[in-house]
Length: 179
Image 1 (cartoon, one colour):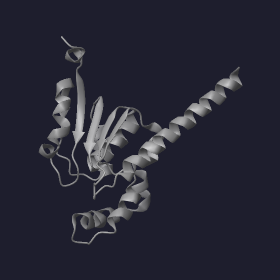
Image 2 (image 1 turned 60 degrees about the vertical axis):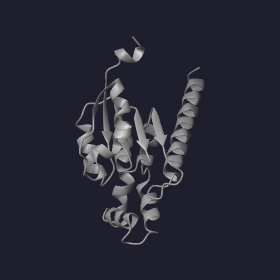
Image 3 (image 1 turned 90 degrees about the horizontal axis):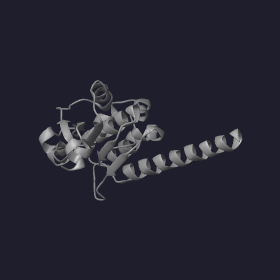
């Protein structure tokens, strides 16, 4: 009996906009080895999706694209592990990227959709805003992604590391002051 045999975990996996649970089988199927996996139909905006996710009880949340954005936000709010694949982590950066494409392209349609939200809402629903609250995150991103550029994962990783270093520095200062 392996150590994995004793592990029962409840995972939540979210697909991207215009996708479906069957299209993220490559993400959820391996997690089934560790316990129960729920992959709900998910046609909500990020904010509404986050509300739905936070109503659930899970130990790990994973997602692809928009589902990855929601997974990162939920992980930050709950302090739980996250797997995010090709996730827009800065929705203003994503809006700017999508603005460069023709209106009738998939990216152009996504631009129109994102443009319907106030910038303050896009900032509020960007995982990079909550970098200091993220723990145990696995970011996976292809270099040639033309919908969500790899810079999203790179920037989030940089922000998480920067916040972690800042917290470590502050803790060291506090310990020095208390001695």
